[in-house]
Image (tube, rainbow over all chains, first blue to last red; front, side):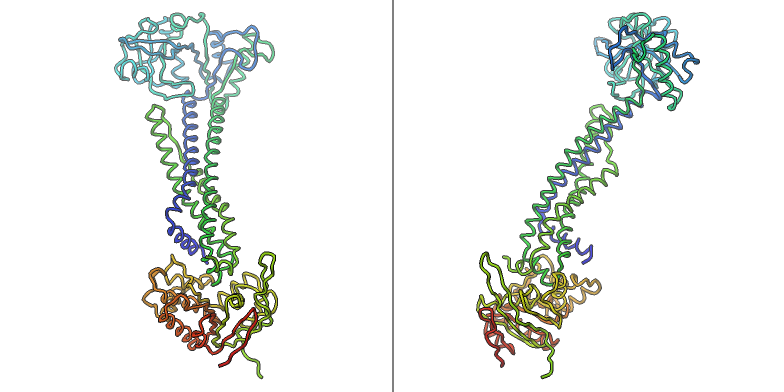
Length: 408
Length: 230
């Protein structure tokens, strides 16, 4: 008996019981589809999150006030002086650019329409460090900052909400916290990020924000974005910033009153979260594969009993134990393999639908069915068929020919 | 007396079954010699050990004690796989209820012993030839459900002779057939014996069938009652 024959014979016997075969593989189909869809959605989510973190800028470090791990006495805020110190090429030779901001939520209005946005007070460096493009207009200049000018840049989402368009808005006047501001430009879309939407923002000069909108003390900043000259020097920049702040704030040893995150920190945290998420969902999906496997075993046992006489006949005309074993194993493996293949297609459709729904609700998100997931699902479903087929097949192969022939 | 060419040689074969607590002596020491090319009927009432003897002759079962030679090979202590191979090559079975694979065509049913023999080349042609020889050359691709009882039994016979066995073992071959097709089947079996010299052993209740054979072995309570020579 060679392989193609066994397969053909197994197919014949499966086709003879179409409905039963279809119901049997349903368990495997659902299991594999779930695994594929979960892995695809997980991978897609990871790509989106990593993409949005990378979209913030390149080789960035984020400096915040305060220490997240321990309480610090006499905690000092980040100031304009600190930011200027970062720009000192002798103290911090690996820094490419520095942008400091103050930020807060605030209400804005245009012709009776109001909305709540994240307001960021920024300097001209912000455009470069955070990698923002403009649809129209121009960015905030040093003159705006020095003159506390009442000018604003709108994120595309804000433009949509207030104007219903993203172009020909420059020159309009909107009200931020009741005060009139002239729109000088519109930001290009960057997509959603793990810090909320990067598009639902309004940018104003940092001085204007500090004094007229967010009421910060005159030289305080909330966050400092520091860009390293290249990826390799990110750890060096980390040390340089830390050293400068420790000196300037006169902190006690080992008690920093500031926190520095690198982009890699965010990436690895996000990676860990999505990995756990994927493994958890994949595990649940795997359980349904297991249940599907038990279904196969059940049906194969029924099939063996039903075909006892056939097995007896095959043995009488010369089938060896191994021939019968292979025959029934082929059937169960084929069952689960078909289930696997249909499941892969089904899972791919599900993940595509999830992607569409996500895209329709405003989050660009591309579930990816990887070759590894397909291979894994195929191998796993075959293994399930093999594992759960062994017991029934062995039972069939061990039947005594005399007993089996006599069976009615 | 010169040594004869015995295709079947059983010496003091016994078979003991365990039925719950009780031991049943199905065969209590049977010695049989059947020459090559002979036609023999095995008769006996139910419970006489007829089926047990047939199972042992057909290598489906092993005797509890005694020696059994088929084609000069000692079969009584072979392994399961060796027995399967012997059945495949030396024994052709014809059953009362045909025992065909209902999902497969006549051709595939007849091919089956060749498959288990590991033959790959020319199976189809050989199977078609065998079906031709039992007069079913025009029914190659019919399934058993599309054939009459007599035709089904012919398919079973084609399957039995495909590997050129030493013996054909027919267990009530006409039991499920009307008298006309029963006669045809019996004629065909006897014909094969004449044509190819294949030893034919028929297990039957029917004394009319037994009359057509040259020798009748009658079993009673697990023993050979008497050997009638015609």
